[in-house]
Structures are given as structure tokens and as C-alpha cells.
Amino acid sequence: MFQRILIANRGEIALRIIRACREMGIETVAVFSEADRGAHYLTLANEAYCIGAPASTESYLRIDRIISAAELGNVQAIHPGYGFLAENSHFAEVCRESKIEFIGPPHEAMNKLGDKISAKTIAKESKVPLVPGSEGLIQSEEEAVRVAAEIGYPVLIKATAGGGGKGIRPAMNEATLRTELKNASAEAEKAFKNAGVYIERYVDRPRHVEVQILADNHGNAVHLWERDCTMQRKHQKLIEESPAPNLPKEVREEICKAAVRLVKAAGYTNAGTCEFLVDSAFNFYFIEVNARIQVEHPVTEQVTGIDLIKQQIKMASGEKLELKQKDITTTGHAIEVRINAEDPDDNFRGSPGTITKLRVPGGNGVRWDSHVHEGYRVPPYYDSMIGKLIVHKATREEAIITLRRALSEFVVEGIKTTIPLLKKIIEHPTFQNASGDTKFVERTW
Image (cartoon, helix red, strand yellow):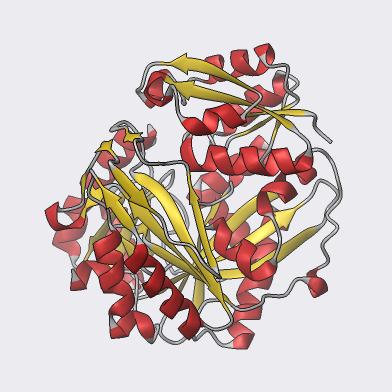
């Protein structure tokens, strides 16, 4: 087991990892930018090093500075959290070349699954269902027109190196396809330095269901069941829950088995998530693999009782999975809402600034994962999420009631947040009867 770990991240996830390490008797080294200097969570680490200016390109994305901090801190491993360098295969490779373990998958598996065309090939070989589309990257406008005609409109143009909704454009007809092909490719080149795009049939009003997996270095892989992440805006998740409501038992079991087949075929290890679209007839289609711990991992922890961060650390240190698939069950229902420093009434404009008053909810079945506090200044440089509110109850109905109560107790002053929108969503009949799709929030608000 590791004695000392560096956390190559900030905020809520850095605090989450520090807490897990403290419970495991592992010392931690934190890194921070000038914007995060003085943050309270840094005092819980054994050491903390400043790695640069506020901009992430001068701090949290600087591999050289993070490796230097790891060498100064004399660590054995680096946990990347989520975001920043978490899915950067080059960073994973540099860590291991520096004789520092990367708490995540091998860079070879990250490369295979990070490229969506390669991931689709592995999925096809593993008999994991795919949305009909192009066999590989689109090489010309005329090829795009031909493929779209074969699979039928509407279609989606998607960046092969995409993520976070970038490089994705719908096309309802040939004229739109020709225009959006150029736009998607240009956006992908700007965001990912990779202009490659492919085409898939547009799945109308789907749900978004993902499967949490764990895989050790000894050939063992298990799933920890599924999460429903249908409530989202522009491909950014707002609400996540587990189990996925109204998902037939046989579909639930099959989608989870498919995820395990896929990661085994890719040689994937550590924690990860396989994402799927589910249509109105409960057909499911593979989208991508997130090669890291996810923001919504607490809902899985609540229903399974398994600490995913601790499992990551154990597997990275070489331990075998003690978990057997037959023993992994779920209890009750968990829902997570992301609290962002954004103004929903002003097109979700970011709302950095000082939190002048903060009162967070509590009580039976309520969990609050956050690094912020009264007097904390939300910086303008990073993701706007300031925390995650998670509830866990015996049934979904009870979880919604507890979530409603918890959100009503929440007080955040000094900045705008998404709490008012979240209150509206959970009161809507479409959310309450779990009949929504991934565009529901955008259509309704």
C-alpha cells in the first residue's frame, strides 16, 4: 500500500481524496494555483505546493510542475481526480516513466478508449450494441452525405476526441450536414487538436445511463450497477441517480454485463464508467468510456456502500479486488444534484465571487461533498461547480421528498447558483415519473 500520494487536482475532489487517504493512513501532498492559495482544504494535506498562476494552463495542466511537486513531496503515486489531466494518457505515461504510479488506467487503455472510433471498434468486437453510423472517421463531405443517406436522418456529427459536448452537431438534412460538418471539425480541432469526426444516427429523446466499473491488475473486473444521468443541459449533467428508474431488470443486467465485457477487452484497469444511450424501447447503445472517477460517483457509493476512491487506491497499489460480482447489490435510491455558481436566469452565466452566507442542509440521508465555506471566494478560472448534494433513501419517492427538503434549507448568498433551477426540475412531473430525456431541461427551461 502507498504511504504518500499527491493529488493533482483542486476543490471538492481534492478534498474527497484527502479524506479517503486520511482514513487509510496515507499521507497526502496537495498542489494549488495562486487562485487557490489559502483554501481551507489544503490544511488537511500533509504538504501543499504552489504550482503556478491561476490559469489552469499555468498550474493544474502543467505536467512538469506536478511531477516536480511529486518528487519534492516524495510520493509513490498521483491521483488525478476528474477533469484537468485525469484522462490525459501522456500524463499517465509520464507518471509511470518517473517511477510514480498513476491512480487510473494504463495509458494504452486510455488511448484505445479515449478515441471514440477505436472505442467503437472494441465495443463491436465485444458485442456491445452501437448506434448505427460510419465505420471510421469521415474523410470527405461526400462520404458524410452518403453515410447519412444510408443510416437515415437526423444524424449527429461527433468529434472522435470529443468530450463535454464539444464537437457534437446535429443535422436534420443534407444542407445542414454539409454546413455542420465543417463547424464540428473546426470546433474539435480548436478544443482537442484533433479535427476527426464521425457520424451516428440521431437517437430521438434518449435517456443517458452509465455503468460504474472496477478492474484490478489481475484480470478481475466487476460492475457496481448503473446511474441515470438523463437530466442534463448541453451534455453537462445536472442530476444523477441510482438505480436508473423504470429500467427493466433484464435491461439493467445486460447493460452492466456489456460494460464489463468492454473494459476487459480494452485491457482497462482501475475505476471507470461506460456510458450508454437508452431509447424508448429500452434498446441501449454504447457512447464512450470515461477513464477516471466521475463527479457522480457518490450516488453509487450510497447505494452499494463501496468507497470508490479507496478502491482506486487499493487497485493502483497492486491489490486484488476483494469484491465479487454476486455480492455487489444496491440498497435504496440515491440522487445527486450539482450546485454550480451560475445564473440560470442569465443563460447560465458564471457567478464567481465571495460566498457571504452559507447554510448547508443535513439530516438523515443527506450528504454534502464540497470544499466551499462562508467567506470562500469562488474563482472565475475553473469549473463552476461548488458542491454536490446527495440524498439516499429507501425508495425514489422518499429520496425526492428528502431532496426537496434539503434544497429548501440551502442558503447561499453573495453568488448566484443553480439551486432555484434544481428545485423546479425535481418538482416537474416529468422528473418525478422519470419520463424525461436528455433534452428535457433545454426544452422546458
